[in-house]
Image 1: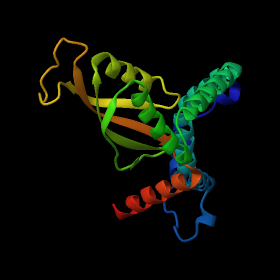
Image 2: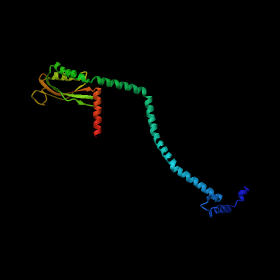
Image 3: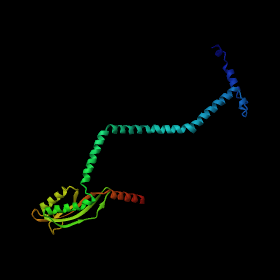
Image 4: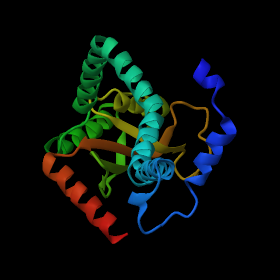
Length: 232
């Protein structure tokens, strides 16, 4: 305590500042202690600053980027955790969906079964006493995983027989849909039929049948799609 009381701050500051006078910038090794220490601290701070901007700034940017990813990673983790918890139920649903798809595929005839399906439609009409004036399969339209074939149909018969025929078609084991139905009395054009259910009527319609594509056809479809994509 006595030494601090005897310390003359004015003399100390004068001695300290005096060490910075008349310095030879070409020979820093001969400087007094105070300038050497100040120069050392300055160089150290300058080195740290340059190192920060040259090296650590990139690391800080990477750290900030990882921090920005953290909320997304947490959300992704929570979603996957939910899926893991519900995995048995999801597997059960997957099996159910596969069974449903298999049932639908069974309703689509293969390429070799199309002739039999066309015969079934024809027999459904003949079985109801209808006369086919037109039964013309159209151009097959290829889709991604199935083919669609329209059939122009024109039948003549009684009202109830025509209705029963449409019901028979809808109940076929294979998928067949009827479109653009027009029922009219012969020679009446598109006019509505008379109320007499025993009268002879004519029905024009388009039946659409569907079949699944075999592996070779699916591969051809993929190649055609890839070729079309390259042309764009």
